[in-house]
Every structure is written in structure tokens, then in C-alpha cells.
Amino acid sequence: MEGKVLLTLGTPGKGAERQSGTPFCQPTKVGVCARTGNIFITDGYGNSRVHKFDPAGRHLLSWGEPGTDPGHFNLPHAVVIDPAGTVFVADRENHRIQRFDAEGRYLGQWNNLHRPNGLFRDQRYFYVAEGPTGLTINTTVPFIGNRVSVFSPQGDLVGRIGEAFGGEAPGQFTAPHGIAVDSRGDIYVAEVTYSVKGRHEKPPREIRSLQKFTRQVD
Image 1 (cartoon, helix red, strand yellow):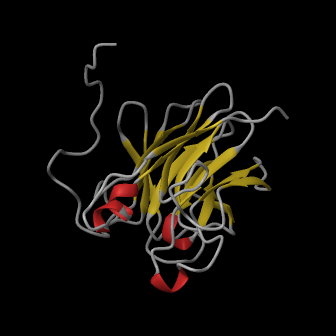
Image 2 (cartoon, rainbow, N blue to C red):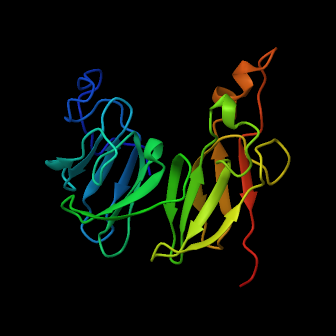
Image 3 (tube, helix red, strand yellow):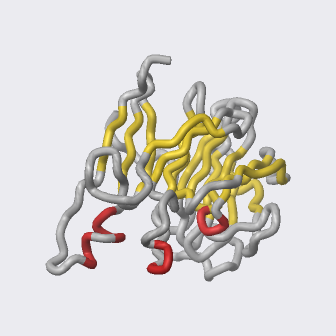
């Protein structure tokens, strides 16, 4: 591994116009289908699309538009593809995970989520990092974001990690954003705590940004 660039998608320094639907405005995540090698990219900040490319980098199709209906997006923020080729998209500001086939046809959605930022799949479960509310009126309402939710491949809720309110103590979250799971089932949650909270402190300060959780034997 020498760090040699093998493929570049898009033109550096030349972003697409906001909500134009064309690649790329401000992309948020990349997912690769293990079966086909096709590349799926959520273009969430300033666009409401998912773009599909083949392994050589040829643009195959794009889907999605602004809105709240099935197949529409309000800041698609993460994407993963399961072994069958189903595409799962964290539709953050619509508070849901949407499911599509490889051609962008809507298959369904998972609800009862709050601002899903991060999405990860291992051999058993899907893991969703849910962000904080950001609304002053909800700061005293428990169980609004600041957690990790675990789902079965069928979309059944298996469990949640986190407490009623966000915080800095172990097991609490301030702003879950990225998530990964290793081969042992240990869960790693990265947070954007400085941009969400730390920069607003007086004086601004750094806040813990990564936690690890060990899976209990089941």
C-alpha cells in the first residue's frame, strides 16, 4: 500500500450547483457493493441525490429529489449496501433509513430514528448513529437522538446504546456521527462534538470524540 491514487470521481474544485441533481455538490458518504464493485455516493449537503458509478468510475445513474415522500431526500448522509445489493440510505433530516434496489427503486424505510448520521453493517446487524436535536425546545426532552440504534437485517430494533440525555460521561453521546464495528463485534462511535457543542462553549474547548463499546456475549 503506497497511497497511490487509483480513481477520482468528480472534478476537484468544480462542484455542482445546489440541488442540481448532478455529481457532486457536497458528497457525504461512499458505499461499495461487494458483489458488483459498483460505487454509491450520497450527495447530501446541497444536493438530494444518490449517485451510482461502476468500478471504473463511469456514472451509471442518479436518483432522489428534495422532499419527504418515498424516494425523496432531506440530506442523505450515509449509505451501505448489503450482500443482496440492497442500498440503505440514511436520510438524516427526514429521520429515516430508506431502502432501494441497485437501480434506485424504492423498497421501503425504517422509521423511529432521529437524525441518522452514520450507518454501518456487519454480518449480523445494522448500526445507526443518531445525532442530537439541535432544537432548544427539545433540550429537556429525553431520548431524542444522542444514541446508537441496532437493527436486524429485516429492520427490527435489536437494541440501543446511549442514555436519556446527551452528555460527556462514558456511555453518553454529544453528537454521534460516524460508526464502525470490528471483527469481534466491538463498536466504535466517532462524534463531531467540537462543531456541535465545544465551539459554542466559553471559552471553546475540545470534547471527547470517540468511544468504544464491547459487545457482550450473546
